[in-house]
Image (tube, rainbow, N blue to C red; front, side, top):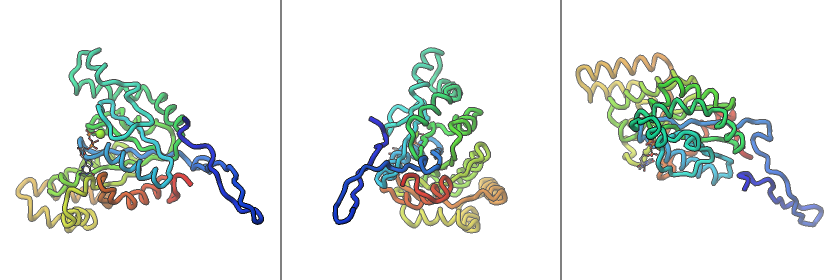
Length: 287
Ligand SMILES: Nc1nc2c(ncn2[C@@H]2O[C@H](COP(=O)(O)OP(=O)(O)OP(=O)(O)O)[C@@H](O)[C@H]2O)c(=O)[nH]1
Ligand SMILES: [Mg+2]
């Protein structure tokens, strides 16, 4: 069955008669817009797959024509059914058997082999013909972000507008040392892809409101973060964290953290407004 319904029944009043006409749905592409991609990136277990699932369901409820792509060749079970799936081309289990590799060796090989399948994956995305593609990336972020294949895949996977969505795990981030380490990682991801990047505080339902505010205050005002570093860290950890924080702030790549939850859908409206601004200039994906 085609993913996109070709026609919608419209009721119109002509004179004093109600007539039903069939009119094509106007997709973003038909209006001359693009088919943008949002790559969901974060450390292992930061909530990438559940966030992808929650966001796609939420967008579908607002009648947005969104498709989901799984780019994790090692995923065993996903909380969504992918419209495009890298596992159709690269299978970690097969690689382990064929090359006598352990799971990590096979994942590294798989990460590089995905680059060879770029034309097929692009073809699959074009066949899906959605107005937005959410791309769930591999569990181990370093395999995607820090090998040559990752930026190649992001650049070559269609020529449409793209954004990176970087997840900070809320529970992990409440410690200023972890938070600064995550800032550092997100800056390293930006340095790899050079695409517009949005920062999210994932699983925010797991922290009390007060702690969420503490973390978002750190992004809004570096002085708050510096105070927490001074209060909670000591010695070399304090020195390193403060210097990393200053270095990242100097680069000017700091961006507001948007708290989100895949369990309660908190923050999705706020996040989507930012994503739309980047990908479509503030328009909806599907009208
Ligand atoms: N409470 C809560 N739990 C979440 C949320 N998002 C994800 N989780 C849980 O966090 C765990 C990891 O979530 P995933 O979405 O699989 O994380 P991931 O980054 O895709 O993980 P890998 O691909 O294995 O690196 C799962 O047990 C989820 O149930 C959330 O918003 N709230
Ligand atoms: Mg995942």
